[in-house]
Image (tube, rainbow, N blue to C red):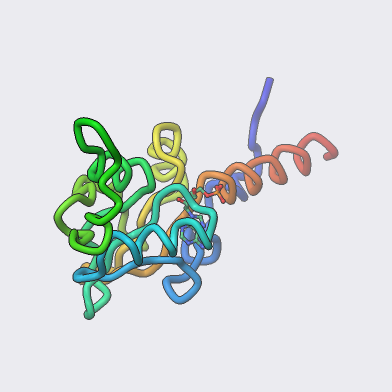
Length: 148
Ligand code: AMP
């Protein structure tokens, strides 16, 4: 049976695990789709946050969303990349948690999301919590327990 007797994993503060905002690849409200596609391609991430100038989170932009938005009836309208802005097409439904959220709550949400956006109590973007980081921590805790 898998068990975490000492509760070490469950006591993790997500602030110590998350990627802080300054290391998160993102775009800003007002950026065009060409810029967003450039950041997505260069960073290699599938989806990245869209922030405003005050570091408030407004949505997520991804390569599939961008490609879908420039798909015409007979051709891909590449010229639209320069004309459209990220806020016109971004996904506004973002899975977000407060910095005070428990690791257990985050783990549950991460079953259906590759990463969570983390907000301060006053709603400013603090960083992201990728599924891979949480799973790696859980894996470490399980291996540690099994050696005991
Ligand atoms: P990972 O678990 O590292 O594969 O990350 C899962 C997803 O989280 C990636 O596909 C990105 O959408 C997002 N992500 C992870 N790290 C970053 C980062 N430094 N900046 C922006 N997005 C990230």
